[in-house]
Amino acid sequence: MPIDAVKALAAEPRSGQITWTPKDVLLYHLGIGAGAPATDPDELRYTLETNLHVLPSFATVAGAGAPGVISSLSIPGVEVELSRVLHGGQSLEIHRPLPVQGTATATGRIAAVYDKGKAAVLVMRTEVADADGPLWTNDSQIFLRGEGGWGGDRGPSARLEPPAGGPDRTVERRLRDDQALLYRLSGDWNPLHADPEFAEVAGYERPILHGLCTYGTTLKAVVDTLLGGDVTRVRSYTTRFAGVVYPGETLRIRMWRQEGAVRVAVSAVERDDAPVLADTIVQHS
Image (tube, rainbow, N blue to C red):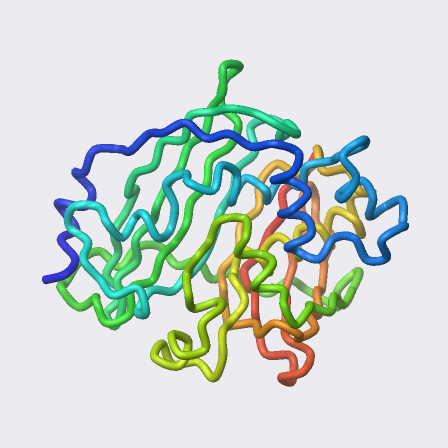
């Protein structure tokens, strides 16, 4: 059996040092669509090193070589084809504002293995700390298509009740045709996002956008629209990837204000508002 839940959960955590510089932060921000228009002061805080603000979702790519989605597929107890892997969801908890540059230790482990019947789900947890203490905790939910059905724990449901009433704000963000090619330079080299032949084998008409690119684009929209552009207000950010996005499409981002939080739903405009991100919450101060 390709998935051995007992062995995967018992595997030793993997730790390694990660570093990042202002150049890495700038590249990430460009990869999620920052810088349009290029001379807008609100955009320059993401794209100019002299007054650089770090969007918290940068934590998902910081260090590039940190334990992550692809590396989790090489641990004991897991043996699957990359073409059958989907990123199902992401949770991020921010312990302190992210510095513009830094060196830290990232420790990754499989925190849970769930049997969804037609798929297995791995929860890959990465905890990052520097000399001053914890910085952030990342949980990636990784769907392995065709690997379920062994009778294991199905795990909790991530589905939330939809927010009441119409959204408080709705914005649209047009993605570049080369958005995936630009975003992958931050460290996610999965050919699903660049190679048409690989995408076809995986069941897609063409390469799809990284889920974490949509994740970052959405958080930037929330921060800019409802949090006054203050990246330090974000405390946590959770989403479920409900559908694919193709480069060049337009994201419709709906936001509902709640006490200490923003509920968000994201859809693809050109495909009749097909859901893209669901069960999405940004907790803030």
